[in-house]
Amino acid sequence: MITCPSCGKENHDGFAFCGYCRAPLAEQPPLPALEERKIVSVLFCDLVGFTAASERQDPEDVRARIRPYHARLRQEIERYGGTVEKFVGDAVMAAFGAPVAHEDDVERAVRAGLGILEAIAELNEADPDLELQVRVGINTGEAVVALGARPEQGEGLVIGDVVNTAARIQSAAPVNGVAVGEQTYRTTSHVFEYEPLAPVSVKGKAEPLSLWQAKAVRDRFGSDSTREYKTPFVGRELEKPLLIGSFERAAQQRSVQLVTVVGEPGVGKSRMVAELFAYIDAKPELIRWRQGRCLPYGEGITFWALGEIVKAEAGILESDSAEVAAAKLDAAVSPGESERQWLLQRLAPLVGVEAASPAERQELFTAWRRYLEGLAAAGPRVLVFEDLHWADEALLAFLEYLAEWSQGVPLLVLCTARPELYERRAGWGAGQRNAHTINLSPLSDQETAELVSSLVTATVLTPQLERAILEQAGGNPLYAEEFVRLLADRGLGSDQIVLPDTVQALIAARLDTLSPDRKSLLQDAAVLGKVFWAGALAEIGGRDAGELELALHELARKELVRSARTSSMEGESEYSFWHALVRDVAYGQIPRAERARRHRSAAIWLERKAGERVEDLAEVLAHHYLQALELA
Ligand SMILES: Nc1ncnc2c1ncn2[C@@H]1O[C@H](COP(=O)(O)OP(=O)(O)OP(=O)(O)O)[C@@H](O)[C@H]1O
Ligand SMILES: [Mg+2]
Image (tube, rainbow, N blue to C red):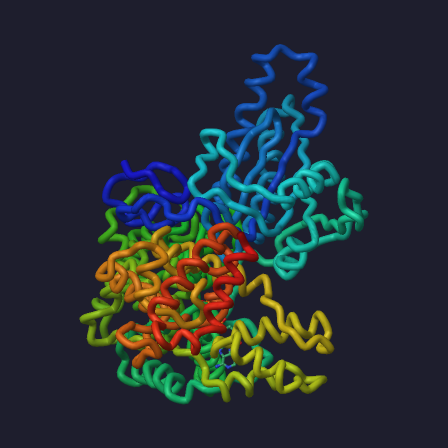
């Protein structure tokens, strides 16, 4: 058994990633930083009127009543990647975004809240005597997170005002309702339907809190590539023709092509797919397009993306019962199909119907391949698998098998993935003659500027503001869009740009896929600034030079840092952050006292390195010493 350094749960030997929180499990050095500042969402759930009722009951009866309730609560919370911090009698507190952050923690917290309401309804239905009623409150904000804490042993994980406020919101929530605070509402208002609640006043706060009630999920899982993009497409003059070329090749040569579009979050992978969709849509002939998405969480999702494709093909809806789904599948598989029953049985698990007899994996793969080949035989097909970095090993294996074994049908298998896919599967698509990768690098400044000016329609940005956005976005179109959106929300009058929550969450989640040691290295680098040197990192963290080089190489492969060809410091290899924002987020995570210490070490190293040139570096040195003093 290996204990996960992030969430403390036990995993089987030989696992590379934690099965609960997905943190890397490789042999970890002891945690370098024990605390981190993070944006977390805290969920409180309390039973209504339970305390009064339990006073009249025997303690054993109370315990028997509450046990299934606790178990279900935990199940709902963990299903969405939350951590149960504690049960206090009939109340539970859970954290999303700690110890490990995900880009959509706020959304997960609200999904869990709604999931709890459903679970309570189910418990009541199963045993009408229970009559359980709950209130759920959720709040999002910055907190100090104790990384090494073991909540299951009663150790506190999250500390901060965000916790107290969440408790307050919970007590103000309607019975059998989920109430959320402002930041939670703002981040997720496009995902859930909300209704405003009356504001409540809180001790120690001048302004009353604005509250909203989450009513329902708008859309189960958004679909990126068929989403309508209103902004013009810029750049990608080399990559777009490559993608179109792969499709044409599949269509004209009646062959299978496996294309993977790779790049960091927000760089434009889904948009590229959407561009191909637009190209195909404009063609006179009918070309069928289906897509599925790999999900970062949930149960029974190994082949979810493939399931989505088969469900769409058969017209099966999420709301359909198993019988209806089976009937629709039956109708969708053509009657002439020899081995029809065999095929139907193998397809059934993909659409959430239990098969009469379970089959071996290889047999399933064969069946699925034949089904997809059958679809493509009727005319060119595009199958899109979005977000392959979240795909289960088994789905990856199936896609490679499909690309290798299918022949004579016009089929483009188009995948999108972030670079971490290659961490898990270095050889993805390698060695296959019909597999290609399209790497998306950041947009040029000119392209970003073009995008930005198309986004600000009404007013013209001041040159300073435009320059600031270009610098911060670093060629990432999503970042650029988010900056402009926030600016528009706050009024273009301001001349300063602020880091949008969405971008913060995205980057924080990427940093949390790193091992604690790598992350601490990145935080050391952040203290030095956008540009840093390996020698300085060795000094601040007391690291071995060879090990350091390996670590930096890994961070470069993950597109977090890059090495400079020439160095501004003699004899020192120089690196920089891929994005200034990655630096800012990493820096923001370091607790204050730690920051002071690291600034001091940085100054000592620079001073020694500068030698006679110390005058040149006077300002930089002063900055580090000043920070060390101010933060201490
Ligand atoms: N070449 C481009 N021209 C104009 N806008 C773009 C371009 N590429 C991306 N965008 C915009 O940037 C935003 C993010 O792009 P997209 O959703 O495709 O990112 P992604 O790489 O799929 O990210 P993720 O890994 O999070 O799925 C979208 O709103 C998209 O319209
Ligand atoms: Mg995408």
